[in-house]
Length: 244
Image (cartoon, rainbow, N blue to C red; front, top):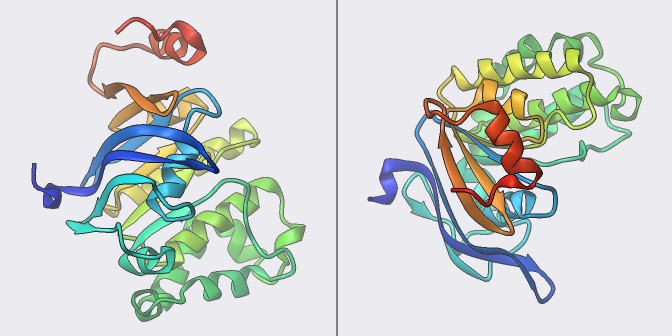
């Protein structure tokens, strides 16, 4: 199928660290407006895949296309300028900066600067806690608030697609529900999503399709309307995925 049919297409991607290949020729796609989940055991390549797509690390081989354009020769900055935005794990924020400074700084590309005020209003409406604490330093925020801010930073980049790496890691059930509602609202704007998540119930509530990543490969693709149930998915996750 032509690349332009997809918001994102990854073909036969190999990537890793030092001499070790984590990704073993992985291929996925995300259609326009689609929400796609990645799940699987820790250390099997999910985060490496997002890092390779966004050029945090340089792939060894394969191809990545975004909105019909090959990204192979583009730097991480140029990929952000195209609107493919990666929100990584672990709330990678500047601890001494205030919330508003952080959000305003995120709108650094020409595309993002054009819509900065509108996007800022949207982020503060989506996450009222950030509006209430707008002059607080990042280091004073709770884990949930830092995660809200990380997603807000992604939105300030004027995304044409968002890649979220474990947005609920370490959060309480209540905060997970709040973030699920916020991510659902983001997707209503037609922004395609690629979501890594360990909480199977959380990811099932949000996505249209899921890829099961096992040892750097796609072991299975699951459509939301398929007859695969929660118990079978958990069995795959915890080691019973040999069955096809």
